[in-house]
Length: 105
Length: 480
Image (cartoon, rainbow over all chains, first blue to last red; front, side, top):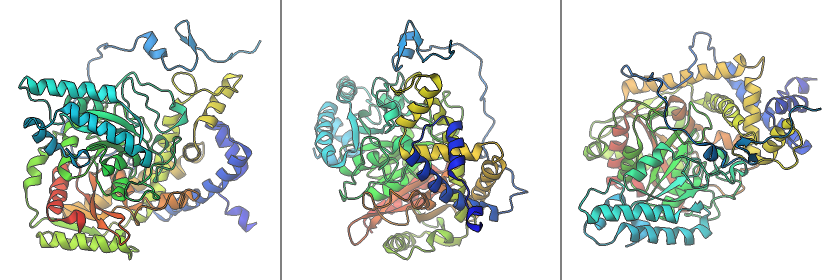
């Protein structure tokens, strides 16, 4: 049982996460993924050695800087025309992106 | 004209003296790149028409007696995660095999406006995820120094192109070391500027709080010139910095006597190998130039890998959600429903390493795990940035290794993702802190494999970084 307790992620949870990520994985990929993620998550456990209760999270790189005007007037600029926006679509037509049927009849 | 030895300065002088035209440089570089690519696979595609058009403009400007721009006639290779209008940009992925971006990255726009010739798009690890360039959907890049070895990653093609000499300079991108490490493996200069120094507009997003664009070159001055050209505020990237781009050329003329340099002790532990030996020689050389060395401690270094692989994968899982098979990507032909279209497109379009990172990132952000992983990692990131802030109270720069070992053999580490991640330990810390860091050549091992030395300075102190790198180069440090 001790061995089971040390497993951070198993194939069942890999299937669940793959669903969240909209990622189809083969059975072979699932087995390999469980092994790799488990190894990496075990290494990541190392962070628990640190007491971070008094630390502010760093969401972005911070540095001393003067006041900056990051807000600007909302002025419409040039944008892509319909043909340009659709040029790379795997399937398009009639000025739209085409996708498989969403609503079943 | 020896195209593989050209520098920005020699091109400028050659153009001014009418020794050659920009078009002639362009043709020579394209010809060499096409021939050289059979050995290295550094380029995914060349763009002769676009490059020649820019070259002809530069020649016309020179003929009319106008200033042709700081990069006039300079062959530049661009990593394929950076968009180029009208030129396929794959990110090394099957997912974007046929994607032709309708816009240029700001960095590309700026370098081309300065006369730079975009001669081709370079191979890289898929979506810049990797340390060996073996994760490209279009085959690995071979290191021009030793063809059975990797060039490093993820910007392996950009490093190899400059090392081989098919491009004078190149653009790479760095999220956790993807410019410095291949720079060190290929024996060229690689610069990761301060976060926000170069606009990320047109850099295909991997981990937005860590992504940087930066230059490769064969000397410090060329790297500085390219950075100076592309750096600066861009309204299209709200995280791009307002700080003025200071005169790098002037900084590089200064000597380094009395400069205080810190040696992070944690980086030199376990470096009892040839890499450590080369670093010691480089440090000795800097001492003879009058630099004053002090030991500094960066106590949170050992937590950097764990911290980084939470943050970068979390951001990647979010950023890569856009590849859905609808608008501009590959789409699976097997899909019959909308849900299948998403799942199969992503399952077939992404390679193993990208899937691994999307999965890890999705897991650490999933319900019930956010505090334990993502929030924890953001706090540890603050501690790591704090290590640097404390060190820079005592010293002006840090000198450190880039990689624990030189270029390894193709296939040697590909089956052990954790071991591959752990090898990024010396570069990830600087990326997390967002400070400028560069790799400069520091001689080679007995087998002739290049070793890199890393120079790190305070936020926006690119002048200090180039000053030290340039002094090291002038004193013969590259071949120490």
